[in-house]
Image (cartoon, rainbow, N blue to C red; front, side):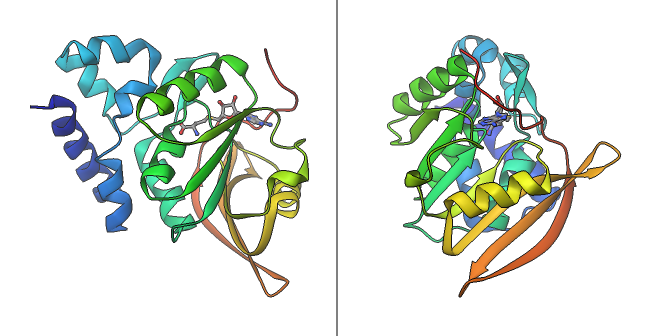
Length: 223
Ligand code: SAH
């Protein structure tokens, strides 16, 4: 009996009620052991602590140390649904943190490269993803200042609140024809809105989606 799956199943119901509709995304959210990505909850959850499991599978962001958070499952589901990757595709995540969004994309069948500016988090995510047998490549670096030879990618997820210029810069550096990018863009008043950019036959189409809240995209690296 794998007890975390019961908590994950309930979490998926909440994510569904919060508006994520894509069946494949919901299925994958129920299959990724979120508790393993949260340093302070991993041990207690593995020991079967029900309170820790309830917290780990709540539909909220949670602190993971280094002043950062693991994203809210509904937000991870929504970003993945908006990206709607059709595997096999290459996806870049800028701001991969503990690796949870990378794991969801990998479980969907994508080939994933994550970029994280905090070295300890990059190391942690590599360990967790490796332990799950997921071949995700994590780069310690600043997503705004990487060499362009990494790309082009079919999909890009930015997981930190950024300016429109940042979003367009990342799309220009790593997106190719047919690429879709989802990014939380600062829209003033402390709010962000998910911007979807798509390149089709050399033309860029854009649409604005949900309001959201991510930690900010910062310059430089730590560690
Ligand atoms: N994707 C994570 C949540 C990450 S929170 C999840 O699935 O839970 C956003 C992350 O972006 C933080 O870890 C932060 O350190 C990182 N970040 C911020 N600015 C960055 C930059 N310029 N390049 C790379 N990572 C960045």
